Image 1 (cartoon, rainbow, N blue to C red):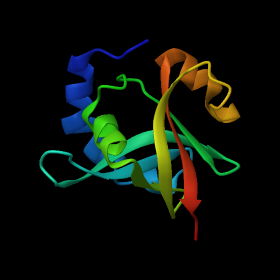
Image 2: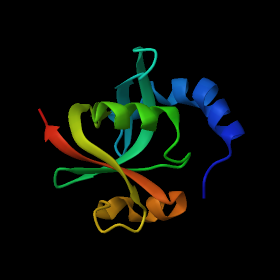
Image 3: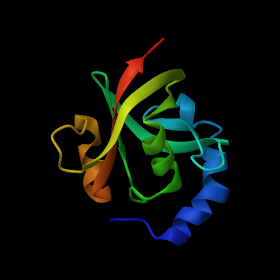
Length: 125
């Protein structure tokens, strides 16, 4: 189920700044660090990020056309702050929620979102 745009706008300006204060430290929450494809400005977006065996899955509750998703797809990579660590993610692509590539722990949240952002962890501390 795709979340309505009005909820997305409220979250962008109200909820996300608050969640950004703690999301990078408490897994499965994480913070996606990305650069705007038009503005070249740095952004931080809190997400539920599931990592297993060098793979990442993020259920796209607002759909694949969300600005942050388009930014990371255009760049092909991004940094993820999760559990107090910074992970570098590459090979970014959007998958259907029923894809066998979706990380096992993300399968239930993915079914609610219809699409998933998938990537490979290329660098871990």
